[in-house]
Amino acid sequence: MTEETQDKTEDEATAGSEERAAARDATNWAKSVSRLKVSEVPEGAVNINVEGRRLASPIQGFGKMWQKTYQVRIPRERVSAVELITAWKDHFPEFWPEGNRFYGPLTGIEPGDVALLNMALPGKMKLSTGVMVLYADTESFTLMTPEGHMFAGWITFSATEVDTDTVAQAQVLMRASDPIFEMGLTLGGHKQEDRFWQQTLTALAAHFSHEAEVDTQVVCVDRKRQWSNWSNVWQSSAIRSTLYTLGAPGRAMKRVFARERTVG
Image (cartoon, rainbow, N blue to C red; front, side):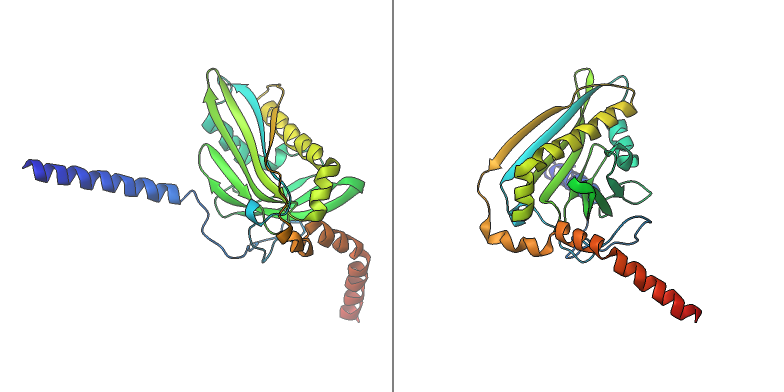
């Protein structure tokens, strides 16, 4: 074999390896979608702010841009990074604080999955929204929010092994979706969100029989508000969820009349 032929063979082998690696990585990403579609609505979930919505990155948001990082350290002897992410995906709804529900597929968290959420708001109100799984592999997964969600952005859950610990992390990059949500975050919403993820990571650590404080780091990445996106308020899941709740008596009466006509 000549030196030129050998070099060509090595180049082809390298290219083939890179193509296979790229193909494997591609399976970890959700396929591009123009609008979200909910395959089924579990009992107790409400699909009024997800079906047909587009995904929203921080670029489409209204408020200041924030990066929030929450971490908890668990001894490596109790769980590895891969084992932690597997358990986190398999039991994701179980780690959420009481009063909040995550209605995802029973098979765990996979790229492209769309989950419905019922979130607790002050005044015992419920907010119905959702997320899509943008990326998922053995060491991390990322959720992305739809239009009308409380914020426009991504939430990435990951685990890394550092010294003798496995570090579980939830990192949020977000802007409030509209002026109403921006006001809500300013008037206590940020603290409420911090408690949400702190309680989630505390519950995750407890799953492995470990107690530890959650380290929280909050950075304002961009202090400018994007006033050109103020009209996002027309898709606000808070407004639509409130109207849906107020309309419950009317829907109940409609079902009664429908049954009476069927019986008659």
